[in-house]
Amino acid sequence: MRSLRSLIPWLALGAGSLSVSVALSASTSPSSDDLAARQVRAHTTFLADDLLEGRGTGTRGHALAARYVASQFLRLGLQPAGDSGTFDQTVPLIEATEQIEAGRFLLRRAGSPDVSLQASTDVLVRVAAGQTEGRIEAPAVFVGYGVRAPEFDHDDFQGIDLTGKIAVVLSGAPSRFPADPRAYYASEKLTGIAARGAVGVVTLITPRDLAQAPWAFVAAQSRFPRMRLLDAQGRIVDSAPGIKVTAVVGTHAANTLFAGTAHTAEALFAAAEAGPSPRFALDATIELSAAATFHRIESLNVLGLLPGSDARLAGEPIVVTAHLDHLGIGPEVKGDKLYNGAMDNAIGTALLLVMAEQLGAGAPLPRPVLFAAVTAEEKGLLGARHLSLNPPAGVRRYLANVNFDMAMFPVPTRELVGWGAIHSSLGATLAQVAGRQQFTVSPDPIPDEAIFVRSDQYAFIREGVPALFLSTWPTVDPTGPAGSDPSGRFLQERYHKPNDDLLQPIDWPSTGAFVRVARDLVQTVAESPEPPDWLPGNFFGLTFGQKRR
Image 1 (cartoon, helix red, strand yellow):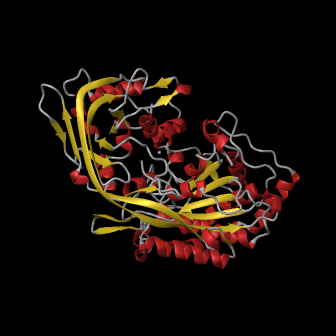
Image 2 (cartoon, helix red, strand yellow; image 1 turned 60 degrees about the horizontal axis):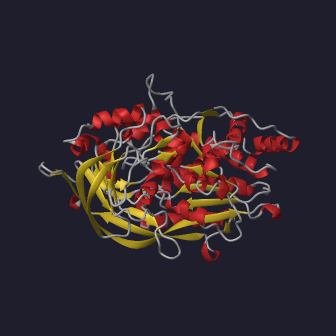
């Protein structure tokens, strides 16, 4: 998973849907879970092996993983859905390696000595994508979160001219926003700032965000190469033109920017939590400079199609995704520098492969299913973004997306989380399926972490496609002490660390049961006469629904 982020009525079941559930109960009973679990374990064991060197995007290890998935698709009889009759869809990228220690942050205020922040320790400075170096010096303006959200009567830009200036903003978005709109505005803010003529952005990490991602973690992640997606003309997709340099300042160093003003960082953080924060010129200029090396690379999405039986629906597949990449080789931790990504997301790819095998062995489904092992999720959902913008030949629109990412099995679990269940009719379908498969569906356990915009389903949501991010989130360890939290422990101890590997505890039987419920979900959607849709008045449906193909 990419780093930092009400009850649904049940659908009525007709006679046709009831017959589907009976058939599913017979063909995907718990007695078949053992075979599925062994298959998941076999695929995961290869994909998370040291041989693949962490499956970093564009690396030899990722290429080996892609060849493995393509060979499995061939074995299963899926149709190639990539480029030129192959399983491979080429994803063009630009990769930049930041010269972290070369970053420079200098604040100049008349009558006061210049103040600098130390690269990596206090600040991370980055040059615009596709550039080897950049330097700007411009007046700085504090504009709260840097968000305009008319539906919440919030506008941080009212009365502010950012032309030729550096916008100083808080990380995230207002806490009074509901979780998903807050995540949307936090992830899209750079575009809005660029549209108002700013030449640079300085982001101050708030205490709320610091609690989710400590500065040491943020600084360590900056050591990995950064990537951006290119279009067919070689242009950067989703660029923010005009923004030349950006910087991220640790919470501990934020007060440096406000020395000599009537404000403190602590007061501004508190004001932002309580309501709209002040907006003001800092009466200072900020000099930012950064350098990087970059080159163009290619990586692969691997696409296999299970055709449907109804020719009228052939151009509307359900797309099932799991990201094949992880972080590759990175900073050494306790003598280990291979980031194997067993849970994140070798196991998710394995789940996809086993579900494809089960669905392919059953009776043909009316609707087609496109299985996609996508690349560069860890770099910003880039492989999924490419696939969402460049459907395979013959695809008129994606009917729905079901995404597997970092399903966690540290202990036995029959507990599901369906991120996105509250947004579309897929939530009601998941409730039906979970009930008949003896699984519990839990609400979002960490709403403040904005999970729904942090994995590959968001690329499809941005194109108006209803999506569901299906995962597990075991909250109780039946073998551990009272109050133990296995999911929280994984996030704290293993997420994006080298020890997310095959040596950690993994309850393989639970993976077989997960495949059963995931297969039932996709088959139910494929059998339904009605396509999934956004719920009336839903934020994402209103924001993106008109773009649905």
